[in-house]
Length: 450
Ligand code: FAD
Image (cartoon, rainbow, N blue to C red):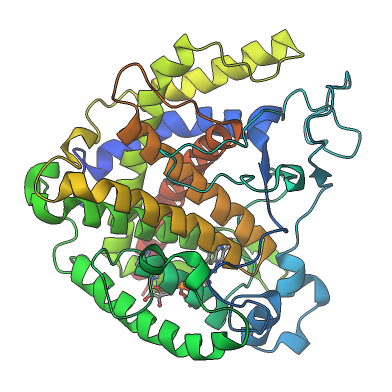
């Protein structure tokens, strides 16, 4: 990347973001890896079915169809199989409901039946119309599961093939703001989506939708000029909101691809590590994807920085039973927000939803993002679903902070799951920027050797 090149739609260069990341990443790592509050996530991982199509018959990305797509699956050891790689590790704790608090304090990393809930409990089952995501536990308060994020890192799982592609296609299809010829969840309502036997016909619709999504992607991408200097958000008012929506999704996709390439299983040696070929194939030749990843970094950085003063002011407690741990978590989270604020004006959200058709798009934008969060229940690999849910919630929270925090008095309260998702999503982005930088060096070295 040319150091001075600017990230489209943001007000910052790639080099500035890389420099900022060197300051932010250690603070985010410290927060997400060492505090109980930010290293555990509560979500409804197993109790919701895919609301958009029947995922029991192999059309969707269940583990079965993902296994079929791996080459020579029979030849590889059981522990390297998709089923194993996708499996969650560590004890899962069921949500205790509104039971009285226990005295026991969890050790870091411990989370089992007897765990104290003081650090991981809050009343976050209420919906807010300003949410950009479907709250994880909106319908089934008692069905949330706690998962250790540290013990279940996002990495290569082998989840692939038609199931994964259907989810990505459906996600990109949410970008299609105008009414179209295929059923759209926002147009027809989820209950109208075909279920059961009708899903076979639906597959054809989905394939058509996939083709449409590809066309939309091509239309919205700027493949020839991905790194041109930006004049800021005012550059193209007409479709700014739609473009931002697309970039968030594509940037998330690029970030997920980066993580799985960075933490890849070498099936010959059985070792985990960066896979340059994976990077070259999915990211290197796709400047637009890397641009979208940096765009997301700028957007989430802005949201985290904007949250700082609210967290500072609020009496939010991170661990009500232990004042020392509470203070330590609080100081770590504030450190992240302060570092995120080191580059002012990184992204100017005030330009959005104001001009042209912008104001009328806001609700649509929100609804479509909610649909993306619902689509995560169609992801057929436990670990991918965990991180997919967390990251959509993280981006949803960032959007909520950017677009709903500006009306003075009535600032929405953030739920625990939103805070955890936001800072872990930020952590994923900091990791992606670091990994992309390393991959670029590796690619240059490989080129020199030729
Ligand atoms: P895919 O990544 O599936 O992409 C499909 C198509 O989308 C591509 O052919 C291309 O046309 C287009 N595309 C790709 N990237 C972008 C982009 N950034 N912007 C715009 N268009 C793009 N696998 C894991 O190993 N670990 C995980 O943790 C994991 N998490 C996942 C989470 C979710 C929500 C989903 C849907 C899938 C996840 N997967 C994960 C699977 C992974 O993302 C890929 O789908 C899989 O590796 C197959 O990759 P692929 O090369 O076929 O292309």
